[in-house]
Length: 319
Image (cartoon, rainbow, N blue to C red):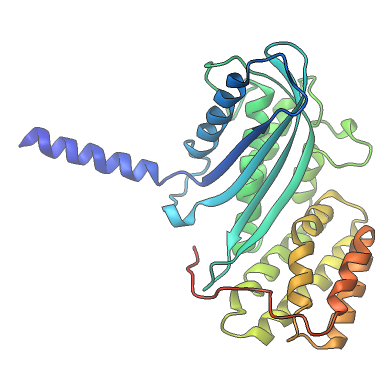
């Protein structure tokens, strides 16, 4: 009887631990240009990265299964330096649910082109928050905290700060390494790992981070109950985005926002429920913030678009 109670208690603890992790990551390794290394190596790596991201507890918070952050890591291996050394680029995307719907809104969408790493098949992926172990796990850990930081910012104003600080810690101890992407001097355009977290923690970008909260919590999340008010708050958040662009022209965090949100903005404000005058104002805002995609935003003006902003109401939301 006593052994049975102990077994049940252990299973209970295991179940609690299984639900503690924050990420629900999908991982895919692509090797379009490689032909030397056994493909089985990359199959193992794919599984190892998935377990590394999903089985590690990144915060002190407890997440239930439906609260986990859905994210995708696609690693495109471009070059074999040796049988265990590779150059790659990694595309990262994360999303969060919208209140009372089964719609998922993209929070973070970014491609990192500077990933060089070593990997020996079946060797564990080790990570230390306070010391260098490998460039691969440092990069994965960094983006895990970035994803969590943006997710929290969308639910609580400036709520992601502790997790951006964790990413900053990784950046700081990577300054002594020779890998690209970690130093301010590595990118003249200020669009690498260093600049992303440095900008997000800079007081000059508080307005942009508040935009994430206003856009998601005060905009998308209330559209089910009050479509007009939700759209109004979304419009106000885009004005905040424009001001962030004025204050910090051509900055990486503004670019991350537009890359992550451009399709959604076009769908929401292209909806027939939005009046033509508001459509024109949104197009003008986005043309100022994201001029490279001005032609795409012109689609917002099209009359008669069927409702497509937030489909399939009736799901559940977290937090």
